[in-house]
Amino acid sequence: MAERNITPIRGPLKIGTIIVIIVVVAVLVLLGTSFFVVDQSERGVLLTFGEYTKIAEPGLHFKLPFGIQQNFNVPTEVIQSEQFGFRTEKAGIVTTYDTRSYPEESTMLTGDLNIVDVEWIIQYRIKDPMAWLFNVDDRYKTIRDISQSIINMLVGDTTILDILGASRTAIEERGRVLMNETLKGYGLGIDIIAIKLQNIVPPAGVQSAFEDVNKAQQDMNRLINEGKEAYNKEIPKARGEADGMVQIAKGYATERVNRANGDVARFKAVYDEYRKAPDVTRDRLYYEMMEEIFSNETGVELIDSTLSNFIPFKTIGNPTGGKQ
Image (cartoon, rainbow, N blue to C red; front, top):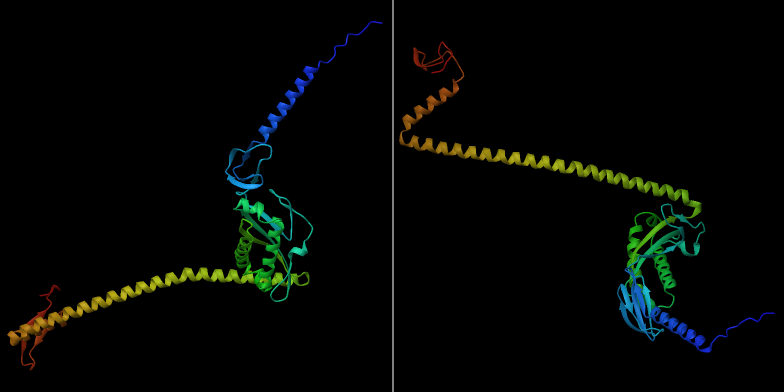
């Protein structure tokens, strides 16, 4: 039987390989724990031995390796939301919702002692990443509990008809303000941007009656809007016509006043001439009056008052129809 040549593993080569592997691993760990990236929608919170150091802006940053410094990226530029009374399974072009109901969240008592199911959404954004990370232990539960408490309070102060109709917007805005005030007291570091009431469903036994009431309110609002539209169309037109008539009346009044002033000036002028030569002025006025009286007459002859003879004083008109 032939003998096999077996080359023994040399000790120095094995130790060198292990050292190289250790060095490579150490370098990889060093590099992996020395840099971190903050996205454009985030802010990074850097801790040194668990103590806050600074806020890191978007970009590539260096930190001390091997866990000496830690970073936590917080999505400060992202609008986040919480749903109450329903859940969205898949959002997209066609949104699908969970078929389960959540009465422990949505069932409430109104101000007029009716039971109503209210579904709503809150939208918020983190404005203080350090407060968000360290001030409250269970952040999401705190947000949900405060939101449920405030919406329950507002619904409990409102009648069911107002909740179904005119007070929806008021509840949303008042809820947003109260939630921000409460969360500011907790130091959670977020800002509630909006509260949107979704489905508001009356009790099942009287749902059809409430739908009729809601339809009647919509019809009432539609008729009111149509009335306002007609009012806005006709009233300005009537006001314009009234202003036009007032301007015409003012113009007529000005014309009459000016004419009266002219007549007065003319009378004064005539009177001044009359005082200078009464007989001449009297005769001239008489002639002018007679001309005015018979200006549209033809074939008229004037005679004296005693009718003793015809006086060719003035002949108004001529054979050709003209005037003298």
